[in-house]
Length: 403
Image (tube, rainbow, N blue to C red):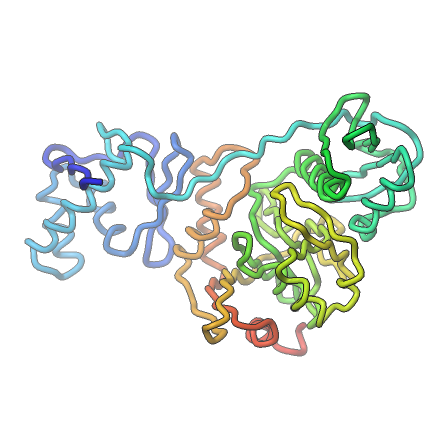
């Protein structure tokens, strides 16, 4: 593909409407309100943007940048020309329009259909997740035996005042989950039913909850605060969360964490740990009971066993826990396990890239709170070669007597 032609940066330079800069440490976060997008700027780019907000001429911006950074004016002019071209391509400057698909992080709202409240049949099992009580009635015992083991740690004794009522039934060739007679979800394979019901319960509970942002992350907690482990599938966050819980941390979540609206404390979403087939042998050495669990079929076609947390669950009473550390794990069996610090802006950039949902659109106040929150958190990336060394490395973040 030929290189894209740069738009000359001659003429007046102004931020596009709705684009604003938030300083984070020595770097910056640009917020584009119309695109609901955050961009991380390094120190030099932040300096250029600050001068661009005061000067409308490219030459004046280059001269001011040269003075601020202590570099030659020609070097500053070349840098300004390049960075201004990139900002024009992204539509961040007045009069410019985005060119193609920009390489940036973008968070989208959660969109989940909500079940009717208080509808359904009496009896069955009852579960509490976040601020919701869900009653589930099964048409036969076989369905109940498939689903209930992965929800057992969420079970409560009474469904009085249930917020959501679900009915799970089997018909020839398929299983269905209904509420008030309406089909909410279905699957063809009985092996897929338990993950389907757990996922539906999660989405309905999240839909009824007020929160700022949902993150694709595992989480554990100590008396010092919450440790977030954000990462895509295969990064090792589930295994790390289990290992840390075994080492004395409180388990909070396997795959999704909610941050509260005002103070951005982490709220526990304690699903059963989803152990994919490739990790069964390794995980069974530490948790022998895993080998005896029934395999299930996930929505993506992968087989998994679900380990109901046998550990203390932190924040399950709905009380948010202050986030103290963010660690981005990456499984690399050929590399030594090590923590490497990230700048607050880099940590925030990576975290937003793993956003799985926003309750409401971002605005200046929300971005300001998000940037201020990130400034007080220690962020790291970590190569993980084996579980024991990784757990030891992360436990060193907290003094023994405080765990």
